[in-house]
Length: 464
Image 1 (tube, rainbow, N blue to C red):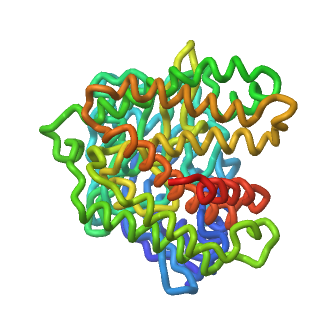
Image 2: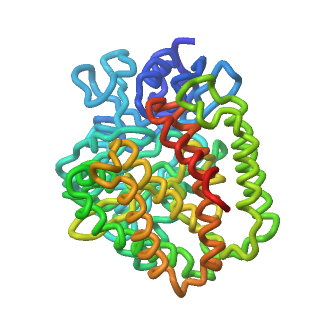
Image 3: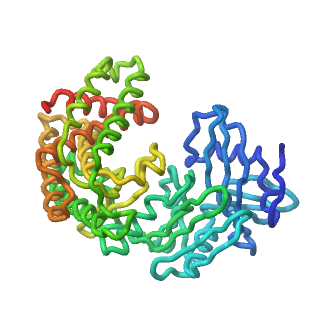
């Protein structure tokens, strides 16, 4: 069909299916470009602003040729025909609809609604806007962050970020949960949560977006590593002990509230370890079953049984500490260096895992392993020659300094097992991470495949 059926306020008259499909295919936040996109329908929407420009928040179901589907959030603006501040969707009867997340009026409307703790009706549910602390009802300059990937972010007056989640899943987004907890429990090494908006209705209950403090002048740890390691590795390494302290303190704070069931630390059961082992084992089997016949993976080709054997060895453990909520996707790109200290950002978790998985309590050592893998990535991507600048020494020192800072900060939180078991668990989670990385690189960055391949080789070579 060419035209959608109007529901309320005439918004859907300007959202025909064919034009919406074409728009979605071209967006960077659309994460299934390799899938055959065959259909689309608007499940629900709410009008955020009725004055010109009209602004609506829509939930859209995308259907694929495989029979599966995803749900995405689409911000729609409607203005009289002419220049619009976003990709055009459709024009009819003198009105043009467009994708409006970059429209400054959208960010201003979100702030106004959140400052008032507003609740708006949708066709079948409600959208709730909430604030944490004060928010300005009037905003001036709005600009795109310029790093669009799976979400869309704009900066308001160089003080706030309005981050709109694109692909939606049922349940609270872990980033909202973790930022809210850390902000209200006094952890200062994050960009503070200032507000959010969420949908509730028959379609699902889901977080739509957040408003967060913007920190100007910050540089992410990955960019810092790429800039400093080739020319001044000591400058970079001098910051790594403090990075370990920040992550250790963050984990201690996340474990600090036994009264909150979503965050209270838990003793892992034997079933938990068995489930972890089975899950990683399945991921290894799936990966090696579909490993391409390619030179880049030749060093580990045919060694799936060896990797699964290493997994079984590493999971022969006694007491393994406690489970807590954790970052879930920690690496150098998820930390910012600003004003002489580190801030932790982007708490959504690994994008390839379901929201349910990302909200699970896990060992905090998964975050530790993620950062250690990031040090290895930086050295490998830079292709640093050991003879020239001591690349092996750089990675060893970064690992040692990070772990020293981490253990000193987390000490007293009663989270970690014995030092021997801690070391074994870190290797286990590095193996899990390397398997995840290899699958990701094969699908997205084939030029980087050798990095996780090298990690798996090293883990197989090290004695347990």
